[in-house]
Length: 110
Length: 116
Image (cartoon, rainbow over all chains, first blue to last red; front, top):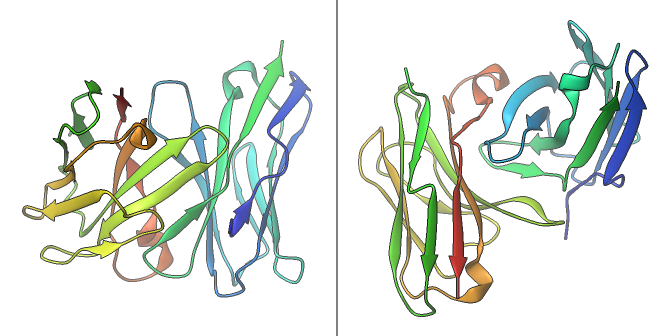
């Protein structure tokens, strides 16, 4: 059973606007959450993370929000740029194992 | 500093053949992982090695074996390949100790395996 879910397989956004990618999890023992970005024919690369003791973490144009009561996290990209077009995976961990969502393919339209 | 390297990049096998996927990291990380990525399934953990000398099963270990050869290298072996093992395989590593800030994973470029 999928413990981390990304219910939107794809998202299209105009350049300069905000991209919001969503992720839900089921295991309340998860205490560390990450977002990865993946280009075709490459491995995923780490983007941003958040610990369960926080509800927000920012890094430049990227902000991750965590709502523990709803078991939900989101990634905001502002402003979106064409180079942000990629597949985004969220992941969750309660120890050494990581559980990944199925990914959301983001297309930023120039 | 190459990060995480994987060989080969591509491989085609016939059903029943065996092969070993190689992975090495030069970041002095303690933990290493093998994932497979299938369409609509995200990345699923096959096996991981928390530290040199230890290995543990992940979500989908059946049909695979692993060896943590030393701190740098972690190999994945398919003893008798099946078409269901057609996938893209990623190796990853992380510091694996201490606070969550150490648990970011670094991924290799992947091996695309087709089993006919």
